[in-house]
Amino acid sequence: MKVERLAIPGVILVTPPKFGDSRGFFSETYNLRRFADAGIAGPFTQDNHSLSAKRGTLRGLHCQIAPHVQGKLVRVIRGSIWDVAVDIRHGSPTFGQHVGVELSASNWSQLWVPGGFLHGFVTLEPDTEVNYKVTGDYDRPSERGVIWNDPTLALPWPVDPAEVTLSDKDLVLPKLADCDVWYRI
Image: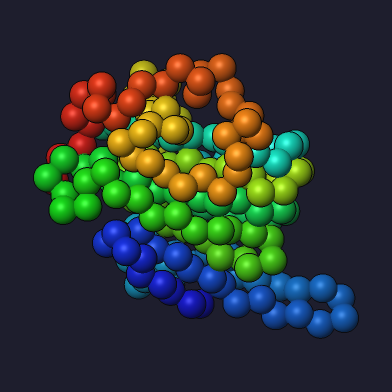
């Protein structure tokens, strides 16, 4: 398994090996011991799967606060996304900074987004399917979010803003500056 430590400590890109032959391929996409050795803590309590029909579908920026904080291990099984993690841990030297990577069915990489980060992604192809494991169950009262185009964050989304499709909920999220402190380190 290839493990890459990204610009913000704790955010990790992993690429499990794929073993192919004339039948197709096999890949061990998760192994508790190997992932723990790489710094990706569990336990994972829930798996989520999304399908986005259109290119430019943007999901995020989301997180959950205590006591239901979620770390996320994100991978793409069809299509591709630009996936982003934004550090919102007050007291962190990287507060407000982001890490973005392309995840796709072809590059087979996975992004570990620890608790204390906003997470979001935009689809780069139609009919993109994303699977992600989370370390905490979904809890609506703990759910928080920040608007995708917050000018202070200035995220470099790789799609034209006119192409972006959002949920009704994501359309009305606040800017980070207008939010309470959700995480401290």
